[in-house]
Length: 82
Ligand SMILES: [Zn+2]
Image 1 (cartoon, helix red, strand yellow):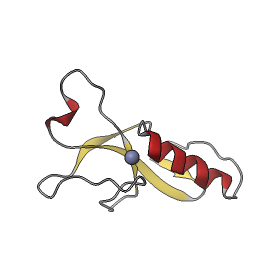
Image 2: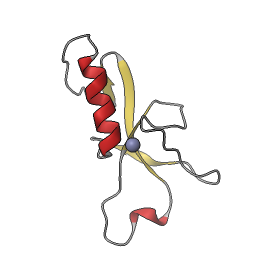
Image 3: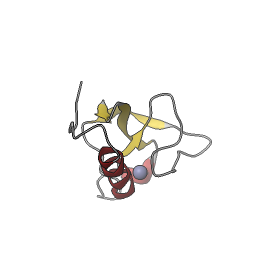
């Protein structure tokens, strides 16, 4: 789990075969029990987020949003992993 400025996120990738063909899966910052990631992407209707969560978000847009949250106040706390 990632704790960014008091908000909790988990790094999740979309379920399904998209992670294949030699590319690293993209991990998004997702609020627990929420379908939509920080970057507003969400898994297709027939699938969900794949378990287990990763330790780190790799989606560029999600990372930018996390950085913005960090700047928004509360001071820098870094990533807290549980
Ligand atoms: Zn994302």
